[in-house]
Structures are given as C-alpha cells and as structure tokens.
Amino acid sequence: MESIQRALARGGVEEVAFRAEVQPDGRTTLGLVWPSPVVEPALGYPDLGVLILADGCLPEPWLRRPDLVPGAVPAPSAAPELLERTLRERLPDAVGATEADIAAAEARLGVTLSEELKVLYRVTRVDWRDDFEEAGRACHAVGCELSGLDDLYAVDGARRHLSWDLGATEAVSTAPDAAVQGLAGSPGWIGFGSNGGDEFAIDLTPGPGGHFGQVILVDHEQSLGAELVADSLTDFVLGRMREERHDLRRDELPAVAKVGTGCLETIEAPAHPALEVLSIGTWDGAPFSLAPVAGLPRLRTLTAFPGTLADPPDVTGLPALEFLELGAREWRALLDAGAVPRTLKAAAIKVRDQDHLPAVALANEILALWGRPQIVQTLIEGDLGPTA
Image 1 (tube, one colour):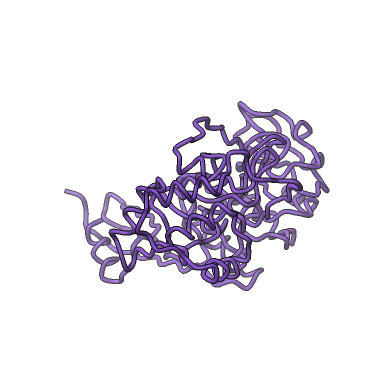
Image 2: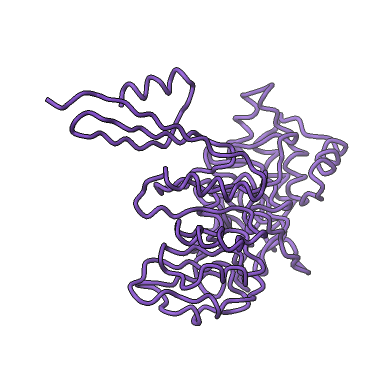
C-alpha cells in the first residue's frame, strides 16, 4: 500500500478507488479506477459514485424557488428608530453608508432590503478589510460577525448542495404554519453575518407563519431549511432570541417513501400524486412491481436495492425521473432493452459486493448514452513472489 501511495503522490492524485487481489503464489492483480469529472463520490458508501449526466445539474430541491406569501409584514417588534438609537449608542463614532451605497447594494442583490437592515448600515457600513477594530466593535454591538454592506449576499441553494446520492432523496417541505420556508436557499435570504460557522440572514421571503425581515440561522451542517432565531433585527440586536428548535423532517409521506424490511411493505401504500422520492431497501419477499406508481407526475427519484424490482424496464413509466439508483443486473436489463430513461440527470450503480471494478464498464455504457467522458480504469498484473 505504501508503494501505491507514493505513486499516487507523484501523480498528484488525492484519492483513487482500487481492488487488489494477491494469490498465495505471489500472482497479483491491482485494479485502479481514476477520479473522473463526471463521477461524484457517494458520501458514506463504498459504491462507484454518482454519474453526473449533465454539467452543473442539481437535484430539484436545490432549484426550488420560494413561495410567495401575500401579506407578509414585519413583526410588531421591528422598530427601526429604536434599532438606530441603540446602534448609535453602541457605536458613537461609526461611519455609516450613504443612501446611494444602500441603493447600489439593493441593485446588486436584486431585492429591496428591509428597513431594519438599511438602518444597520446607515449606522455602520463595516469594511473589515480596512479597519479590523471598527469591524470588531460593530460585531460586538450587533451580536455576530458582521459582514460589510458590499459583502451582503443571497444564500444560494447550490452552495448548500452536498451530493446527489443524499440530495436526490430529500424533499422540500414547509408546514402551513412554518415561520421559515424549508428551502436550500432563497434570493430573499440576505446573509449579513455569522457565528463563526453558520450564517445569519435577513429573511425577505418568510414562511406562512413568519415575518418579513425576520432573522434566520442557516446551519452549515444542514442542506435544506433554516431556523428562526429572532422575529426582527431589533430583537436580534437587543438579545431577544427565539429558543425553540424544530425537527426538520424531509423523509416523510407523502413526498418521500421507504419500502422494504422495517418500512412500508407495498408499493401501493405510498402511491400518491405528491410522491417525489421512492426508496426500496432490502427485502426478503417477492420483487416489487412499479405499476402502482406509474405515471406519477412528481416522482423524480427511485433507488432500489439489487433484486427488489420485478421488471426493471418499468422505470420507463416514470415520466419525471431525474435520479435512478439500481443494481448492476437491473442496469444491464435497462441497457439491453434500450429502456434507460432519458429524463435522468444523474444515476448510480448499487454494488452489492463493494467491488467497483465490474461496475465501471456498465457505468461507461450509461455515460455514453449522454456523450459524457468515460471513466478510466487501469489493470496491473504482476508477481510479488511466494509468501514465506
């Protein structure tokens, strides 16, 4: 292994999938699967990875735009005059931004900032690149590591995307009384500071139970949703924080369903027009038919453990499918039948015995359907001599 590591270091390769087989007489076979721009590593799994069938594509939840909430207004606690008075008392010598500076920031972001956020930067524009002491005073006054006016940004859902194998199996969910929409990001989530790891944002696109201009926390360990931390920026600066935390459930019916041992026992049970994700796990019974979910308009993800599908070409009956994970035999059946759905954006081969090498040829056939670059595999044979 040390020899392999040295060779990879000389080639500047940070990681590689491999399989080594050493016979008692010393005959050795080493197979290497090289990193590829069209293969995204599968987090936490030993499989080959996810085949990306189009550059820059993301799972649907990361493309979701916020719903409009007519009548959303600032919280009763939002008090721009009190906020300005408090900040000027805490920062008597601060130099604020001009109205032209604020208008330029709004034009750059494409949104109208809340009155409280405008007040914040009228008091101090905060340019930490020029004056660290001023930035430190501003952070202490506001209660977080404050960004400068020129550094305000919209929280982009694409930045929070972890991987296709995880992202494709999640769904956006916003309860009817939720204060924050369960999105990956929004043009109306304006990041203005951090706690050293997570991002604080002003929410201009609140949920049905929220307020325009509320303060939310975007957790760097989560990929969807955010937590309400204060009803207003005034509350935030005065230390009047929300303490409740909500369990963000993104794995429940009707949008997400799991079938198999320890889960639902039929495909009929989760068949619903709102179903987006269907995962079939290990199962000792007869293979499942996909007939009950055929034609569902929102079913975009199907993952099925090897041997659990009665007729793999039935996937052609899923018109919205964008991610498909199947075993090698199931993929072989689709390729032979010319039944690989062309709606796919990404695909994965579930390798039961955790051996990447046999899956590479299959993966290259799938990639070829989209004209994507092939995965490079190297096979080395040699003799290490008999064991002592």
